[in-house]
Image (cartoon, rainbow, N blue to C red; front, side, top):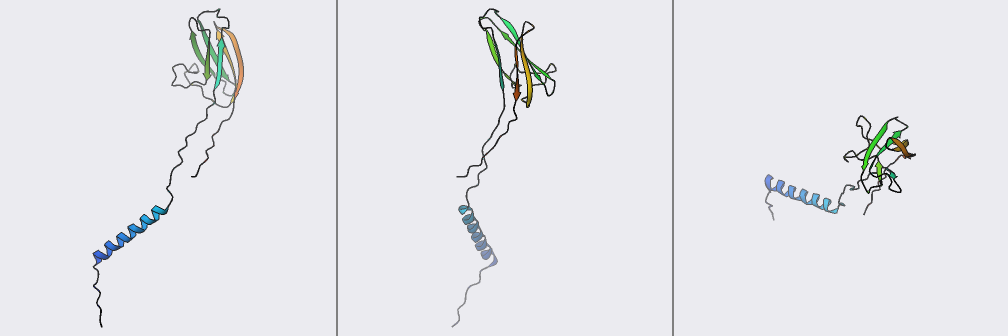
Length: 149
């Protein structure tokens, strides 16, 4: 007894092969864990808060000129604040972001950065040093931990 099997054309075999390959790829991708990129963003910036206060409010309006000196670079950074009636003091952050209208800058306009190192500072009122001090900016760094589900 002879049994005949119809032959598949090339197009039918290619179509069948393509569907089988697509099913295999879908199976493999469905079993693989979903890949996700780490989404953490991190930043660390050191700031120093400097301030002056007319404790008893005797001066009235005055101009406070903050001067920060970098011992490493030798540069001086300035910030001038105008204090009005009923404003006896002011606190400022060093360095101030350059997008802020009042930011610490050199006489040439260079913005201050939080570079590691030793600094001295003073605040002048009516051209005379009223207060001052020193500080050290530390080295800062960021660590990121990847968390797997």
